[in-house]
Image (cartoon, rainbow, N blue to C red):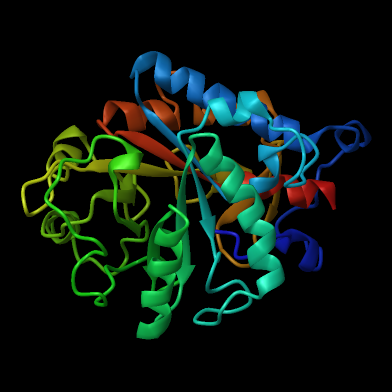
Length: 327
């Protein structure tokens, strides 16, 4: 699901699971960063052509914001134009371990790119991993001071509604129709702790978060339909809110509707090794048309299912898969 740190794939020993890597010599000559930009831009163009105003947020991989991957580099304008927001995990807490302040060097590095996004009218969402109350308070306060919107997750698994604070940060009754309207958000994409889909939906309905980021499926395979999503579009206090769908585009997940059992023993050439931190998630050659067809561009694609369910936008993850291929 979520890569934990910058450059995580360069830190993990190469190990092969059901099959070996299929990377070829021609793949090694690719511009993996531009490949990811083009992929995201394609998703955005497709989704917005069907639903004008549909929101596209990219998590991590902030180096794509500039052409040379440096915060002082020239802006990759086509990429930023495709985005309404960028998400960044571990900005203030959680980079080295949960509930640990992120080292200043790493924090400053990420902030250089995030400030560029904000200065180019792309909203920033921060996800920190901390459970100590003073750290949670600090996460929200430091994000707000920079004009960012934050969620302090007390579970790395993103499987719960935090009990602290008891109400969302900067709770309000105002209608939220754009990312910039939002004061707070909930990021909950693992539904294993909920006994039923109804239990999950009821829990969300009783919250006052301005924005919800959830999975398209309950427990990975039970599709949330348009009626389910419509039931979430108002906060308990009555204000309208946004509902966004999580979508991993740098990994394939073996519990999704698109997975074929034969891939376990005879994988397609675009399917790579398993993520050692997240069982059942496999890196993909995201520039391959076969994979992109799974994600967008046709009636059975993942993004089309998100659109059909009535979500207001998509939250794209594993944007930083380019790091694995570069190393």
